[in-house]
Length: 173
Image (cartoon, rainbow, N blue to C red; front, side, top):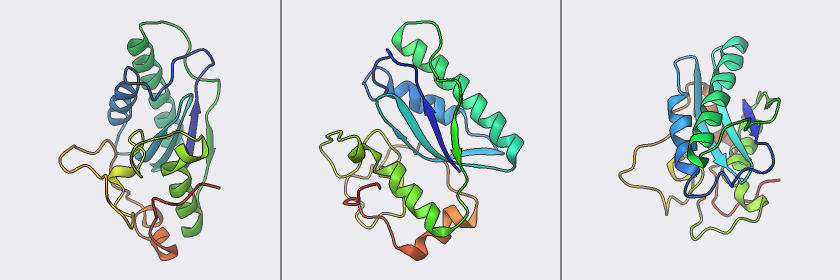
């Protein structure tokens, strides 16, 4: 499932050094047995996630819990109170290996779409450095624990690879 959470206008960038660590902590804390964040990309005002959920109620509960955790973490990091996330989240079910591969490329390389400049091939504000489906792993961390969990479903773990590993030089559509 591709999940997008958008923030209200007027907040500092989620990629800032003050806010990004809080976002990652919230993503780690949101992991459950029935709801898992397998990849993410943090942009200035929204977060793209690839998530797995055991069923639709686990997806709703997990997305709601993640939204609350993100809002509290962002407010704490910014020293503010009030609403953080837009009213609704957007989801898109991924049903085929090709859809999963396109979604992976879209999420992990989304910073290129927004023309964010980073000094490496991999976006440090994403889970790309921990993705084991990259052709080129330069820039991957050696000793930092991963903020995401391994995929459980065949589509997200193995199936998408039949369409080729991801290249850090790809651009999302």
